Length: 427
Image (cartoon, rainbow, N blue to C red; front, side):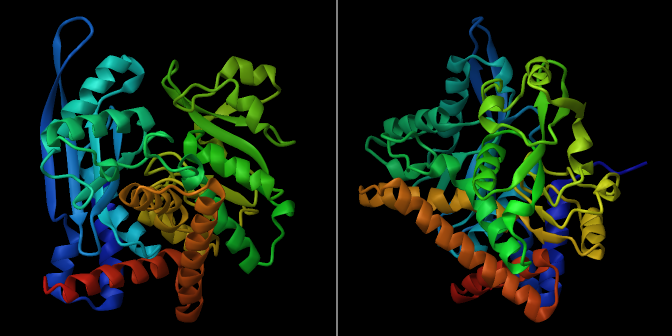
C-alpha cells in the first residue's frame, strides 16, 4: 500500500540532497530543514444563512534571513499544514534562486470558494488578517494571491490590516488590483516567467520555438499566460487539462492543429474550468484528465498542483518529449524525478520556472514602498532580465558540475540562504 503523499517530506528530501552536496553543518541543516515560525488558527465567519462556520487558517514563515517573508495565500478544500510548510520552504529557495531580497512564507485556508459567496469569502479574508495582524507587514511578511485567491481578496486583506493599524500600508500585500497599489504585468508574470526560461532553454538546446509543440496541465492564470506567450514565440499547444467542478474530475482537451487560447477563454470559468460540451462543439477531443502527460509533444508544462508527475505516470511521458517546465509548485515527486533525469529530459525546476510571480510581487512591493509605479513594458523587461539571469546561473552550474538542473538550482539557492544565516550569526 502506498504511503500518503506528504509535500513537506518531499521538500525536506530535496533540501537534504542539496545539504549533503554543500556539506552543510548540522545546525544550519536543522535551521533550514524546518520553518522558523508557523501559525494555525480558527476563523469564525457568519454565513449568508445566518449560521457561523469556523474555517481553519495557516501561515508558515520558513526563513527570513535574506529579507521579509514572501508567499501566497491559497484557498483550497484539501489544504494541509504540511502543504503550507512545503510551499513556504520552496518560496525561500525561489526568492533566493532569482536573487531577490526576500524570504519564504506561505498561507492558506481550508475552504472551497466554489461554494462560498463573495461576502463569505470577504469574511474569511478579514478573519485571516485579524489572526495575523501582528505577524505580517511590509517589513515582516508580505502575502500574495495563490490558488483560488485573486486581487479582490488581497484588497480586503489590505483594508482589514490598514483598519487595525490605522494607516496606509500598500506594501503589506501584493497582487492587488492595478490602481489600488497593484503592479502592471503582475497578472502575466508567473506564466510569462515560465516561458522566458523555456525560451532560454530552447536556445541552449539549439531548438527553434517555432518547431515545437507543448501540452499543458492546468488552465488557470499561470497556464493561460504561459500558453499565450509560448504561442507568440511560435510554439503550438495541442493539449490542456483542467478540473471540472460539476463532475469533480479533471479532463484533457486536445486539438492537434493547436488550441485557440482566446476561444477557450470564452468558455472558461473564473477558476480555470473549461466547459466540456462547448469545447467539444469547438472541435476539441475530450480525454481523461491525465492524458496531458501522454501527448506526443516536445514540451510538457505541469501548471496545476503539486504531486502530479509521479512514479505511476512518469513512464507515460512520450519519447518525443525533450523538456519539462514546472509551472506548478512541487509537481514532480523525487521518484519520478529520477526517471526524468535518467531519460535526459531537460527539466526547468519549479522554483526557477515559476519564480516570475514572486519576482513581480517584489517589483510591486518596491513600487508601493516608494509610491512610484512603472509602465508595463518596464515591469516585463525587468522580469525578463531577472528570469533570464537566474536561468543562466543555474544552467551554467549544471553544465560545469555535470548535475541535474534541479540539483543546480538547489545548490545556488540553499547556499545563498545558508550564507545569510551565517552572516547574521544565527549558526
